[in-house]
Amino acid sequence: MKTPDLVGCEVTRTAFDYQTRLLLVRVVDGRDEVSAELAVAVPFTLLGADGVRREIDPEELSTLPPVLALLRRTVVAADLLDYRLTLTFDDGAELWVGPDEQYTSWWMSGDGIEDIHVDPVG
Image 1 (spheres, one colour):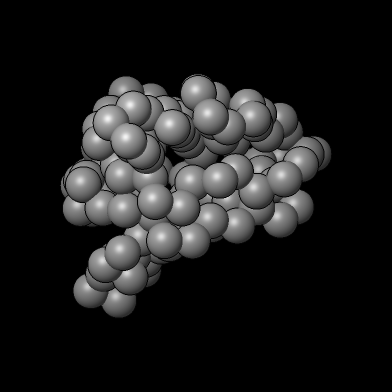
Image 2 (cartoon, rainbow, N blue to C red):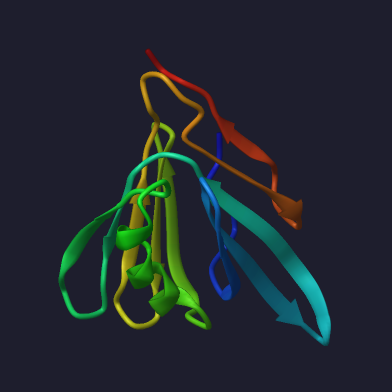
């Protein structure tokens, strides 16, 4: 599995239900070169621009507000290793999500990237 080419993508939408979703869009010459949705269904880590590390649980509403700070932020680095995704944003924030032993933890699909689906590893 290769690292998705997300550098330069802006978070243009956040959505919450029992998952946390980010729409990542990179526009080149007036057209969407990448339009990808990242959906996270398990707890993940968000290091805020303020340097505070937070555990985000998509099913716990009280943990979700820090994700809103990613809106309109741009991805400056993306890494995928052993099904663990790390996104670094232009304000220094970082998002980390890895596989889960019981559940499908995260997936990404859309235009301009290869679809990724991380199934349980246990």
